[in-house]
View 1 (cartoon, protein in one colour):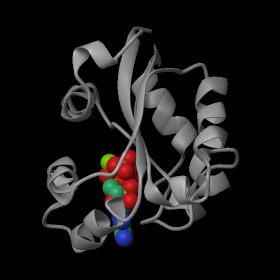
View 2 (tube, protein in one colour; view 1 turned 120 degrees about the vertical axis):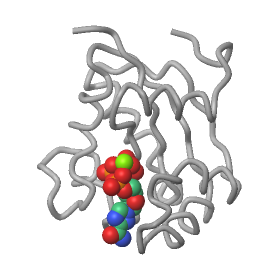
View 3 (cartoon, helix red, strand yellow; view 1 turned 180 degrees about the vertical axis):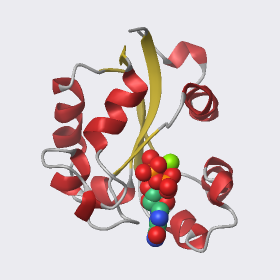
View 4 (cartoon, helix red, strand yellow; view 1 turned 180 degrees about the horizontal axis):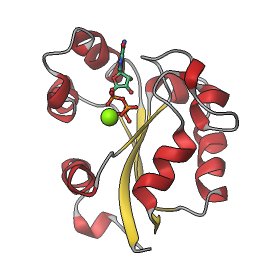
Length: 140
Ligand code: RTP
Ligand code: MG
């Protein structure tokens, strides 16, 4: 399988509970390498752009408000099959449906406040990474 990069966000519910290290340990244990990382406060404009695909959904406003409610940690993860591998260890969007041992099963509070984001395909990964990182901030 090819070496891929995926984009990850540790969401405000995770940073509020000081879970950056606990989640990073799960990421690294799965064989993914954190090749870029920064803690930021997203602007409303950044969050709206990032989640533009969900603009028509009833939860869009709530989602944007949540994503700017506190600090987030944005990351680039690298490894074999990184995109699917990270989706696997994140678990289902709704933590009550997430498999045992996944990040969301262990840490998420609800379907909205679900601790992590991970890209869903190679095309979206490239777009999401480029929204938050310049090439020289990613060190593989
Ligand atoms: P993500 O994009 O954050 O990795 O999560 P996902 O693919 O598992 O979920 P997606 O369907 O893309 O939804 C994006 C985020 O929107 C929030 N959401 N809230 N209240 C709701 O019913 C609802 N549904 C989705 C979640 O924060 C979800 O991660
Ligand atoms: Mg998604």
